[in-house]
Image 1 (cartoon, helix red, strand yellow):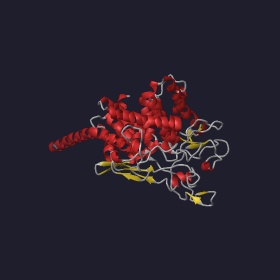
Image 2 (tube, rainbow, N blue to C red):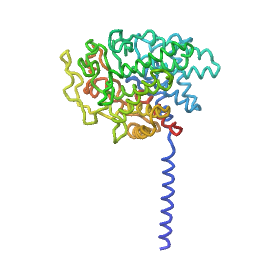
Image 3 (cartoon, rainbow, N blue to C red):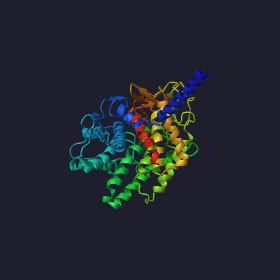
Image 4 (cartoon, rainbow, N blue to C red):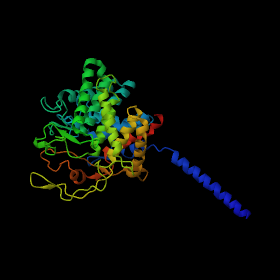
Length: 457
């Protein structure tokens, strides 16, 4: 009996010690931002199905730029990680000439194509590089980065094609020259944050023009929100055309309601839009007359995405208003050329990149005081845990991120397969499901940094 009591006591002690040790492991915060940077942010990631071994050797592209910007923000939070900064500087230097007057693509040609908004956001890295090199006394590189950022801002503000006067949405930026008179949710992320950051950093040099530029930025959000927001569903359609009869807008509704809009609510498109709102409001002067309009749009977007968060996983679906019971219909889309496109029965799925960027935008919006903490922190906390459980896989000491939509778009006329239907977003030839894609890597790093900073909120 005495031995039995000793055994029972020993078992109790071991149980307590095990519980304490387990609890310690659970409470220790793994810095997933650093883990992902060192697994894939510094290299070994995909940009639209193209693999890149080293960030510092990667050419100019909005996906590699997103990864680079997330790695740079990780360095800003953890400045002892000097390799992060060095890799991003190498990325910028790889594409920027000595005085910042030329940005090159992989072929050595000018990387900023005419009215292509996707060519711009990689330039977001220039601002932190400018400040750091200025701090170090490296005036030549600091001016180089300022010049390159100014080149991008001026190209957007003065040279980028806009919807013409007399059309709905006049003054809105084309998404690309090959998509005339079209605005996509994606484009708000590609153009507006770098425009806003330039105004914040350098706009005070010309105060009158600065306020006009902020009005221009606000106009982009107000225009696309006016035409794409569905108040019943509380989501924005992926894209809108001011000329739905144009052959390149074959995907657009020709009749009211929502004339000119595409047909579905695509996760990553909404993610780019949500992040753009938060990123721009970080810098927008509160005294600007349109500040209240943009914050009101942010509140609508945040509320709508809260509604469509998956209750079980905490993350979001590729097509936001459906669950996994929605599939491709098997028949595909019959188009004007008599061919069927997007044939398949792929089910709607929980998608990594949109879920990461929603999580980032919620957490950052709360941190900046733009979103109500009591309302949205439970959404963000559940979402972040959902990211780890649903999409992150440990692999030989590294982590991978799975279930990412490789790409998606609409048209143009030469590609009738990009219809904007549910069949397309689930079964399209370019809408494949992949892993370790830069659009998920970069957004996961950003979400993780905000999560790691949340204790200070």
